[in-house]
Amino acid sequence: MPDERLTEDLIIRLRAAANPQEYLDEGATIDRTLPDYLGVLLSEKNLKRAEVIRASGLNSTVAYDIFSGKCKHPGRDKMIMLAFGLGCTLVETQRVLRLTGVSELWPKVRRDAIIAWCIERGMSRAACDDELWDFGEKTLLGGTGPLR
Image (cartoon, rainbow, N blue to C red; front, top):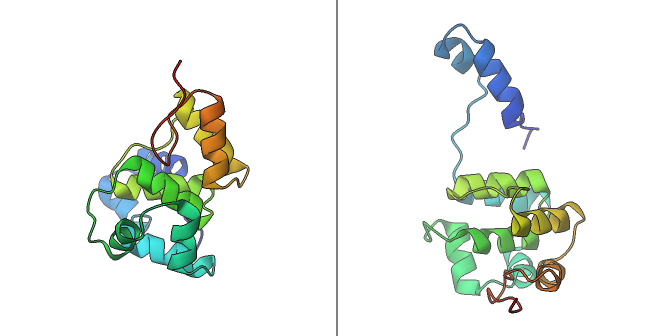
């Protein structure tokens, strides 16, 4: 996958365009589905679905349905778990969330900030859950956290 321009860069170009067609003629827009992007990530990272699913902690049936596009609304935490399984960067994770149609990680939200911090450091999903637990936040797997 060629390097994609960041959304912030594209907004600058869109604002500078005299009209929508000028921006569209630059060819910066893409029509990508979630299963297509997941396939690209698998290929680029030379990973097998089974190892990604194992690393993510997701139920294998649910995960295979996400990869195939059968699961239309998988949920934000499931996609974050899958991103961990894929070893996604923060930018890749944000794209996965965006293509899923859920909110991206937002550093103003305490739990999101912890997850983003873990992703930036290349931590596993299990290690991220440990961090979330330590901070009294809902974990990704199991969706529980300590009582406050």
